[in-house]
Amino acid sequence: MRLAGDVAGTKKAATDILQLCFEARAWKTLNEQIIVLSKRRGQLKQAVTAMVQQAMQYIDETPDVETRVELIKTLNNVAAGKIYVEIERARLTKKLAKIKEEQGLIAEAADLMQEIAVETFGAMAKTEKIAFILEQVRLCLDRQDYVRAQILSRKISPRVFDVDISKEKKKPKEGDGVVEEAPADIPSLLELKRIYYELMIRYYSHNNDYLEICRCYKAIYEIPAVKENPSDWIPILRKICWYLVLAPHDPMQSSLLNSTLEDKNLSELSNFRLLLKQLVTMEVVQWTALWNSYKDEFENEKNMLGGSLGDKAAEDLKQRVIEHNILVVSKYYARITLKRLAELLCLSIQEAEKHLSEMVVSKALVSKIDRPMGVVNFQTAKDSNEILNAWSSNLEKLLDLVEKSCHQIHKETMVHKAALKV
Image (cartoon, helix red, strand yellow):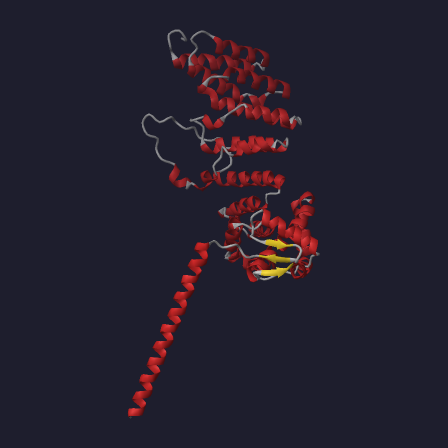
């Protein structure tokens, strides 16, 4: 049948051989037959595919782990380098990695998963591809290989999760490769979105990148299933608020802060609304008063976030409040003595100078310190063009005022003359 090119007959013969081995529970013979049949000269692709798919159904029926691993490895060897069974190979590798992970060999499981580049598989369903890559990222994070985890996570574009699923299902055109349906155990796209962002939170938590963690929580918060359930969105919104407060001041943080404040749900968390309001309002925030009000909330959240972040986060929170206060002072003062600045910030002169210098270095604001005089100057040196422009606009304003005054005087005299005539 094989030499005659009879596809149906060859497939039936190959699968029946495997079926007989399986029914006899002859696992060693089954492995041997799979290798022998796949290596036959001129073996048809369809027969190999059918054989691999048939043998995959037997994996869960194996009597022990050793036999299961042996069967998976045999099938992996057969599928290696054959494009027409690449999806089966990926699924087999995933099963093998799961067994390794259960045995506590996380590094081996991660290495196995990384051998498979599913993003190049045309016939694999999109959700299955994403789930596979997320599994690779998770294993890398478990073995604390953060660099590789980041490289793998970049294979998934966050825009993938925003696609409308109902519009996705269109009939394939002629000549298009057929995309297989995802297996039943693969989560939906929105569930995968949540898993993706939770893994990214783990990655960013390692670097204490508060703004990115906040953006991840924001993306989870936007998932419809989360928004409908208050028990889900309230803790997430609390985390968004805390990470926004902890994030260094920059344009992205400001826009996120304002958009969060406009969220109607925030009215249910009034103390967090007040906290964000304090950071938006251009007024000096007293650190001691703020800490006393929110200490319990912070301790609560710290226990949920994990202790390692908590201690660092408390220092960062103080740092953010000081930065906010320095920005406020720079808005209201052109020049200020270091002593007065330290009083406003509730810090010693040395600490105030240190924080101010750090902000200047990070280009958060422009300032110069005259240390002998102890004066901080927040004004930027203007170039000649700016000064001339300022002068010309001032002159324009002055002339406008003179013209308006003349007009008003003229109007008054006209009214007065009319009254005298009468």
